[in-house]
Length: 506
Image 1 (cartoon, rainbow, N blue to C red):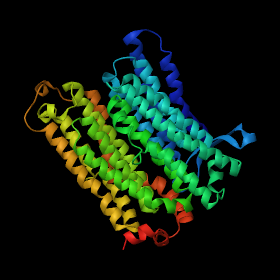
Image 2: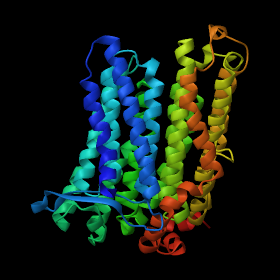
Image 3: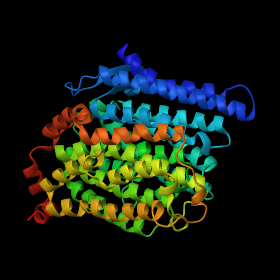
Image 4: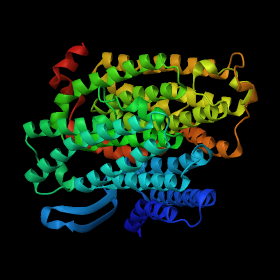
């Protein structure tokens, strides 16, 4: 039953997508049926993912719920899936956010509702497959599969610049994936297999590790994104419909960080020590650059998009500290950021849909008309800043603890995201929620029951992660500790072997 459970979680949304696309009827009636079908499919999938969580043994660092089927066995390629603590938390995140995203788009996506539901369910299946894949070819197939629904959702249901935003998203991501394909073929030629557990022990030479890591950095650095591979992000997040923005920022961007962890930090430990100083520098630049650009934004959604970019820089810093604290913090920050950034996009959409504008200058006094939204938005704003008691604080604290082991300057500069984030987020909150009522704000009505049903679970999880983080860290910490002790060695020797970091720490 255990292997079947993981396969059921992966392909149930695909079955739901086919059923939604084949819904009988015409026009609004057909779209309504497809929406309900999609919502119940994602809720059932979430329930199955909770069963996966319950059946998972966190004391066992290896793979669980494994399935291995013959595929291209003559070439060392198989259909191999399974989960460990790291992949499990991202499956849970995907399963949690997808029904909320569908609920958030119930009113905002008003055309071709059937097709939108099908695209969302296809994206969910691709994400589940990506996080559970234990064969590099299978991972690549699912990784590329996320492009199709992602581009469609931006290009069909997006804003005025949706075609350009969709084209940028496709070209950047697909272009980066070519480097992964080259790396994949190179690894297959040297190891004779694409099985990920086998590749972990393939013993690639030091120089080959360097070239492979560079290929994967370019591939996953686009999706993360790493500076300066971020040009697609502001337009894609801003022009995408709200449910797609939530999935792109909440889960899809995490596939880049997940790939860097799997096929960088854990697979090429020798090369990653040499690359770490430069990736740490790029992560710090992303944090500071995105925060400063966020100050200048006049569109609420674009400001949140740059905020997401800044926080992803913090995740890159955590991963490449190569310490257990830093990697744990990066994974936890990915989970927390996925929840908070989706909630912020939902809050912005609730105001913009009513006021028919996202321009900060045209809004003011929203809290008087929408007190429930104001309360929830304050919680998510504080979480985005990293207030103690929220999940973001735990993630950022662990990242900074890992960064201190490597360089005090990296920790100080990375910590700047908390200070600058407080400035632009509190400024946004003050200008939109408080002050004098402007324009049509006086006619706004507070959140509906459906909108509260979308935001309330995100609020509860944000507080839960801040108050009881071990609920999630106990799932992936054994895997991280095992990998760090096996591959990274002593932190002190790591600092000495990297002269840039060693000098910076003095």
